[in-house]
Amino acid sequence: MLSPAFCDDSIIRQKRYSLFNFLEGQYLFLRARLFQWPRQFPTGFGRVINIFCMIAVIVVTIMAYETILEGWHLIQHPVTSGSGIWLNITVLLMNLAIDGSILIKAMKEITKEARLEVKGMAVVAAAFKNVGRAAPPTRLVFYEDLVAVSGALLAMIAVVVISLTSFQLLDGVVTILIGLLMVGVAFRVGYDNMIGLIGVAAPADVEEKVAQLILSESFVTDIYQMRILQEGRYYHVEGLIELKPGLALAEADDIKFKVRALLLEDPDITDVTLGILEDNGVRNWEPAHSRV
Image (cartoon, rainbow, N blue to C red):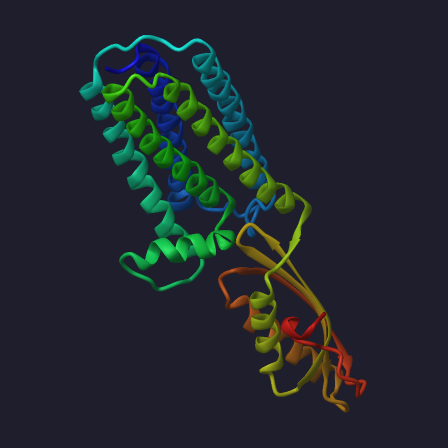
């Protein structure tokens, strides 16, 4: 039947990890729904969000270490079979239901933050494809619940196999696999938040979209230079734009503010700083896809 260690240790660890994910997911989504940026911080909290996500990464890393250590212990010291298969399957099914519902919610949140209109099973593919565009807390919940669901499935397979065979080593092997999945999440989320703290360039399609918006103004002839910095799912735009020759200073300023207002209409752009130059007759701007 089922090994007592698997019942008392591995499944308890899986339940603990699922409970951690559930509480963390509810907190992060509650923050996203109810928390309003105060007047003192009109553009949000920027990279502070990445710091809080890094704290969660540390917690997951510690849990992963303990899980791998326990799995290695179970491989070295296999335990005899016990009972309680239906109880364990029931517990794991409850974990799947809880973590699966949060994972689905995270997928929908990713598509919403990526400004995608998808329904049904298309949400799954869209979420995996556009997870990089989601806010750091949303990415954290997505990756961790992906591991929680995978871990519960692995644990359920191990429960069934161990109950039908005498392959007791599977207990420790599955525990180590779950720990390695947690390590993978810790590295992935940690890397995403590390580059978020440093500051990362926006994706090429976002840069191209911003360039098209700027060049859609009839008096703008070229973009001398532009830099778009991504913080979470929000962007900061800095650039120098070239205008048609012969414009008065007041007219040039009006055009600059018009272009700035046009960019700020995008809900993902929180800050725009533009300078203006007279057209120098040289084509400076090159689309991202044409650069080497």
